[in-house]
Length: 306
Image 1 (tube, helix red, strand yellow):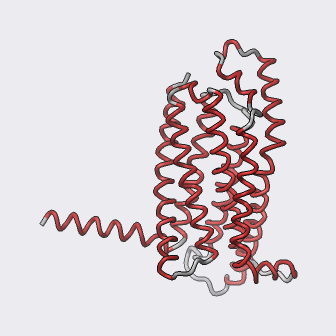
Image 2: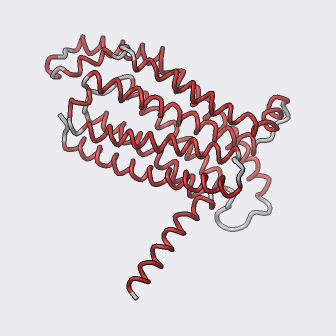
Image 3: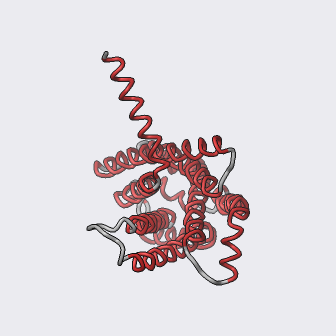
């Protein structure tokens, strides 16, 4: 049964998802408009469209999940659980891969290495990016398919009252869940994590070197060149935090409808939303649309008042 604190956390998660929908919708609208105006689909816009679109659907699906949790154990019915998990894992894995490719794209544009492989990637990133996005989408679909089968029948125990589930059955369920997680999930969520973490570390290292080189000419209390490092570092923290919460949920670490599960769900709703807000904050192109909407709203309100 949902406690009052769990209800509060899930309500916060719904609000966070709504903020994420607004942020990712802004990024999607700006990137799509930019492509239509220029009639050229750049690698950056391609990544941003795929990332914002996958997260838009992911957070829409997560909101549906949060609302269904208010119906308590109905979510854990076998058929609903399979559908929710399968669709969620596909959208989740896709968004993780697209975020990883965004970090990788930044890395190829900013980091300077003399290795032949890196130079080859840097020169061909524009032609390789569409295939990387398509391949990762198919890979996400393949790693989500096991959830459509009967591999999660261990969760049937959750439909019974918690008083009927003894500790030994709980341990068996935990072991089965962890084994399934290792076999079917790690490749889907660990590989993009590795790509993202390595690219982010290389980016931070390169930007730190650039700051040291610019220290003699930088002025002011706060060096503006710190902003890219803060953005990349915040991306890294949000990505790793989301990954940890996802692993805890998939491994069935917490009891259903418990406080721990609710907090993990809230974190999973908050991280993509905050990531999209950081993307909007760090790119002036994404800031123009909200400013234009606000200006248009103010002008319309003044016209009506007159």
